[in-house]
Image (cartoon, rainbow, N blue to C red; front, side):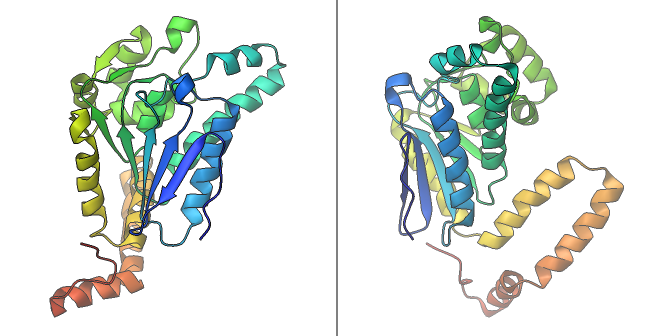
Length: 265
């Protein structure tokens, strides 16, 4: 399996099938420009199809996770036609959706501050571990802009009430506050960050990859449908799971008191 080459990203996959996807624009604090947005979308689609990949760790090069939208990119967009600006905005929306819906666990290794779109990038992660000295802020309104494309994911992550306060005031959040609002799953010191991420990976490697992917879709579905619809959907999905190779293997391995074939460690 040959990993693709990127201009603004680093991608490595270890022997366990854990991919590390690094935003690699440290000179701009990993700000999102057209190239990075395009390459993130391409990486998400490639990883979702790649054989043997079990999970993806998303992080940033340097001391910042992601400073949000590149101001130079925004300045160039101001000169374009409305149709072109809508297209550029749509590219950002499609990239976030591709990461959010990737059929793999996405673990955010949040190595430093995140602003604006960087908070959106955290919000599409299934698990986000941040450093305690990080600063997190939705800064768009300070620039006369809106946190538009990221809003569905940040609101889903933090809830409407917390989103109102943080969106409308551009409040600067500490790591502890970001965790209390649900943006971060856990907060650790910089020295403990890799170990904390590894603990999440160790748990994931005990789980069946196909079941994990199906459960990620299940969560998205039941969150957006009513109870009557969900009762029909979930009954069907559990019946499907009993018929999969993983389902048969998991039950057989349990009664045989052995590890199933997917389990590592």
